[in-house]
Image 1: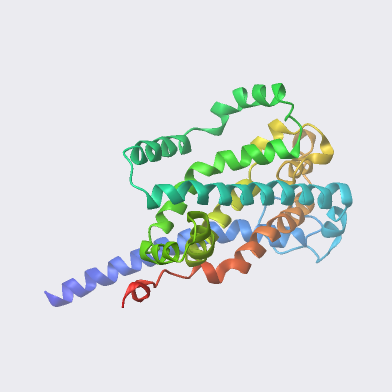
Image 2 (image 1 turned 90 degrees about the horizontal axis):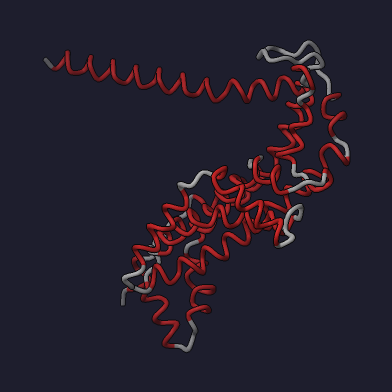
Length: 279
């Protein structure tokens, strides 16, 4: 009986390991194609060893109009949108976390509903609105829409993290004369560093890979971000510069990877604050 139970556990473990291996291969193969194709002078859709190592694909894309200007536009759009999202989410989540009201739950449910709206369903009225208020084909208008589209889920995340900061710490600051805004900036946000980091990374990544919004709201080629300009590598009648596309993908992914590396330590943090309110 014990032997049968042990064999069943072994079978389940092997099945789980096989499933994880299949999932890992599914993730690794596209990455392997990008890396190998970026160094291959004759790259195609197959995952194969390069016919000969070359940096010609990178030299071809490292151009002002092809890469540097779109990347700068992406950094302006996503950086500005992320900063606006984090600030607004913190200001909105603070009263929801700290003050009890009968309107809290309906407001949160409304915010949750807003996260389920497909972006394509709101683009037509948004486009018409932007035309009327002269925000079409402007970076600031796209930044505002980026922030608005990410704000609902960011508020939910920020509130959940903010609930983990003991209110007693703020009450001590209020006793010393601090205002609610001062306690938020000087006490709550520093203590919920991992939460701010999560919201920042999530918002930036979602904006960085967004193709549809800037494609609809921006018209000038010199304002297009990299998420839109990558479409230029797909030529007519199925002709695609696969090597240059792979090289551009590596360069395009670098800012996101650097952002994660810079704040990875904060992502692993926690709210070990239980002892801070004792005594």
